[in-house]
Image 1 (cartoon, rainbow, N blue to C red):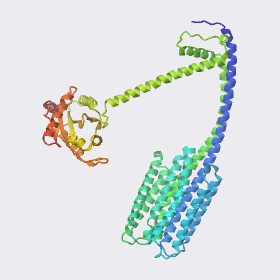
Image 2: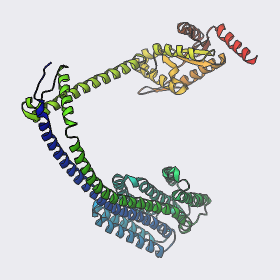
Image 3: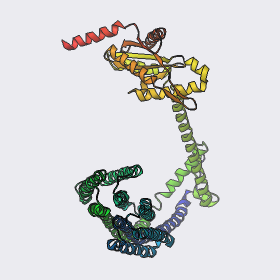
Image 4: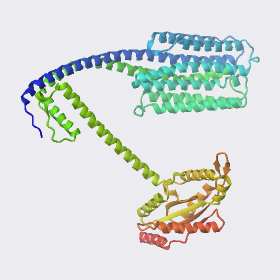
Length: 600
């Protein structure tokens, strides 16, 4: 061991070093405070931008509703003679006003990233759809082609789809920027889509109502698909309302949707379908007048969700300001405490720490007698010393990471080998070794019950291999293993123990249960298998069943031998059948003794 003198110079050198460290830490703290302050200011600005985006989002939802609502008077106008439709004109003015409000709000929202070409596409498609409507209204009711009417309605629906692209984009931005309002924003979008699909459901009847006929097969298919989407949207909405608010405002609003739309509206819709079948259905105007008002609670739910999102956002705005104030106060306080703390720990921390790290350097060199040098003897100054320290720490880290990596690889390899050792490579079922272990465990667990062992193999499997090839035989074995897994309650109680030979075990109360299980498996495996490029293939299997008493002295090889003998008898008896092995008298005697003791 080496001993070095000159330690009296340490206090002065360490003091200079600590002063430099204190200055550096204070500088870093000041920079950090500036960064946090800047982040807080940016957060306040971000909340303002999110508020702007939420306003655009609300206007986009309103615009979708107006375009969807315009279809109501449009459908009514298409079902009656003449082109004078003041209700339709009023609906169009509302749509134009809502789209103009959306355009202005989007142009003022720099963070929304919505270009004018997106609105131009919506307005162009809307104008073309309206032109087609006007062309139909100039015709007499008898001249209006049902196919053209259907295309016109679909074109109006296409306008809504374009608007929903904007809504989805805005909604995703809001969820990314403000996860706190993601739930109400999502529910508002779901409600808007529910309102739109409810409107589309009514529009599906327009052509048939206008021509006073039943729905065609494609129209009935379209109605069924819309009903499925409406049901799915309703379930998503109901599931997304927090359980803790089951009696809250959102739950009550959804309850009104359930009562009015899904109650009154869908009842009227179903009644209309029945009347159309007679046929004596209402006119499109009569249908719209009764059906459209039932969708109002959906719009109310959507507006409630946007108000809740705005309320949450207002809370974020207030918190952002309080965070900004708190950051300023906390940063000043922390900086003062940090300066005082670093000065107080000037000579009590750094020197022992350096000595300890020097000893770590010795450990990396496998030198436990290492003694740190005194400051006066550390040639090259602290810069060189710190480089040496960090190099030693990196070396220790590399050694540790290498050790951890080797251990993880070893554990993973052992686990993988354990799985492979107990699994049949072709079917993925347990192999004979694993099966016998599980069989022994089952025998030791159930205390006196009977244990049934069922052995079976595929009849004439060699002919299948000879006629179709071993690849087809392998596919058949894999599919048979899959069917076993889906048939058995405990797939872990089966295994492949030979080429086409499989076994299953299960605890039973009576021998009849074992035979019933074997017959059930025989029936399941008797269903044809679908082999790619070879069509379907039907096979049969022969089964041997052996019973024994479950106990810790279970002899697996003897039980397998008895089941194999029963299987051989099934083969000799004509195959595709189940045979019971010679009965194990001790098993049944033990069962009777247990029942007798219980009755006494």
